[in-house]
Length: 391
Ligand code: NDP
Image (cartoon, rainbow, N blue to C red; front, side, top):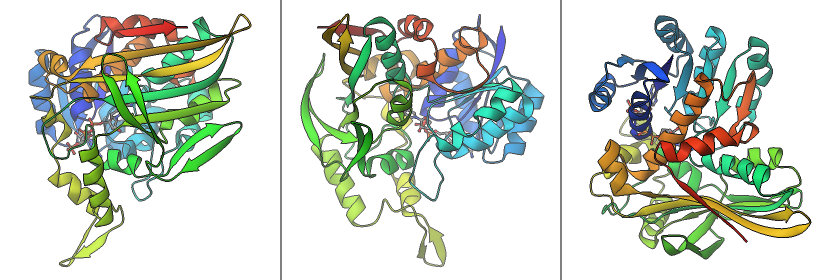
């Protein structure tokens, strides 16, 4: 029985907290801390358990250290924003507590996410005997574990991986993002990038697309994007010849995005306005719907998975593994939409495997470096069933 400190009371934080609260055999005590205490209290009310709440500015490592010393958790689950990753990792190092997150660090003033900053902590975590698990949401997260599972059970060698993320849901709003708008728009407006025959190849943003027939969802237009799990999978899946990431978008979403970009509303540098410095994308975030608020009335399904080719017993093999998640079912269970749900459940499972000793290690790990079996077994137990097809 252990204690979990969850940082970040947003859409994902709400799911993680409710799911941890539903497993008292693993998480005897829970603390939820965030920048706005009121949001923690609202989530606490959903759990029906006497969890603790606290206000913290996780950009300030000293505040996180004080919180950890007060609560003495076994694991810190970081579901605030990527900007806080390093400050929270510093606090875990100082206090000797395990760490897990769902998104890799990116500096606030540069739209550039990569693992280098967090991988650089490996030696310090190793020497301290502390474990950090990076990117344990759905993508990254489950998609990485799907690849590790495929390599362990279905292939002698993997040649190509296509990760496909389809949200075929409809929230009824003209334009909204399904997770933090600032992080989401920064990711999508970057140049596309994929790995092929030993090197990274770049494309213009959203320039490459194809129609793909998603199981249980049907044909959708999917766009090639650079996504963070590509960086770690290239490193950890031996002999990989190509890996790409695809995400679906509707035409209405793309039209809004194009207009917002064209008029400068997605800029991340400050603009002087009536005597104040304003960062346009932060102002845009204030105007757009809170992703958690999309949950009521959200209809339709997500389908996210990996389509993999390689060799087994000397013969070519094609294999796919995916999850289909229904927005309305997530709302009925935890009052969340499927994007928050599919991110929060894996974060909770990862933390559960750490505190129960199924995942152990000293240093900084991406999830595909850990045993996929206990994770794959827990996915359907906590709400994310998966299917696989071999041909
Ligand atoms: P939200 O914006 O809904 O929630 C983020 C929360 O973090 C907010 O409650 C916010 O507080 C809090 N926060 C922000 N800054 C600080 C700070 N300095 N100190 C303390 N708390 C802070 O985002 P989501 O819940 O949608 O996303 C959470 C994380 O999950 C993000 O990092 C996102 O990138 C990641 N994600 C990962 C996915 C995956 O599959 N791997 C998919 C989707 C999301 P306040 O409300 O006061 O602003």
